[in-house]
Amino acid sequence: MTLSMRDSGVDDPLEQEVRELTDLLRHADSFEGLRGALAERGVIASETILAGLIESEDESRFGVLLVATGECILFEANQADSFTRWERVDDIASLKDRFRAVSVGRSLQRLGRIP
Image (cartoon, rainbow, N blue to C red; front, top):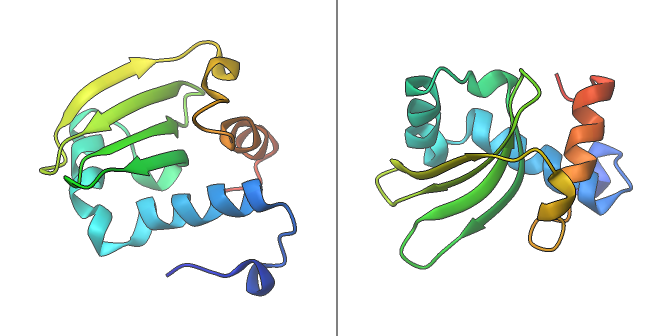
């Protein structure tokens, strides 16, 4: 279930992007495999923010997760939702060219604005 900006009351498009991606991660059937892969790594999807995502034509995914422990994770997952890359990122500013919303996601996380 994805909300439109008008329905959600959120004016910032980057905040809306983070909210929509996080909702997909936590609830969409198409993300069930990714949720399972996160669980295998001890990451609870319902406490994780998806702050950026690029999906390719071969159905692989490249994105940024903000986990409850405060870590920022750059990941790649193949079409079977197995992680092919899992990298902790200490400097989230280094991601801003590819994932513009990651700093907004971090702010939302710190402020507790995404449960």
